[in-house]
Length: 210
Image (tube, rainbow, N blue to C red; front, side, top):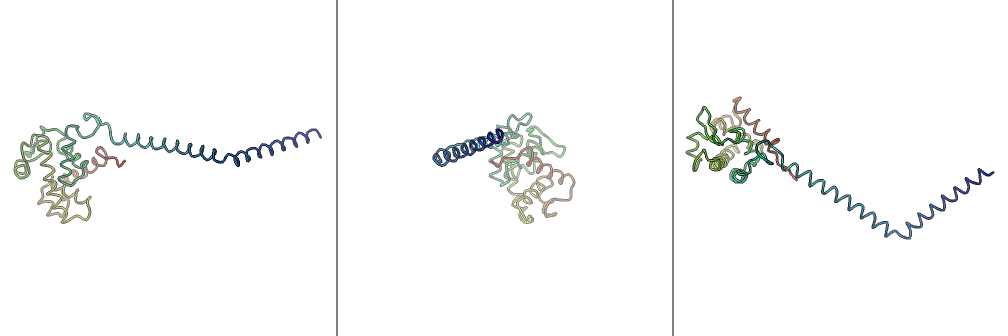
């Protein structure tokens, strides 16, 4: 009997406690609503700050020998200008420069190409202004030449990705080779060149969409 009595009292206490909670919620629903909204706002602010931090880390990848950005700081503005001129994304132009010279303004090739954008004398005579060994002059000429090649590539391409790929192939193999192939010529060096640039543009020089 004593055991049953204690259980009865326990059940009564729980019922009364439940009534107390229900009564509080009924009486002070405005307070409960305000606390809920405050908690939701705090969680949202935390998630927002986390997103901003994550984007900041993506926007500034650490690359050896180039500080906090894959593009050298003193040339980032020139790459942007060349991008505006050519219509080619800045990350693709930057990847192209790496493929050409690894950002070395004193680079020379056995074929006679020179400078950061590797212009030959004949090509520079048409598209260059200033000195091909000057980084800014060379990048500006790269923008002009790539604009011409992209305009040519539109005759054969079905989308913007193909336009960019065909134009890059023209830069490496020459515009006549691109026209003859109506795209990327069946030249191993040129195929590897285009693939390398597109991979670099999507990896090392990728731009955040944040």
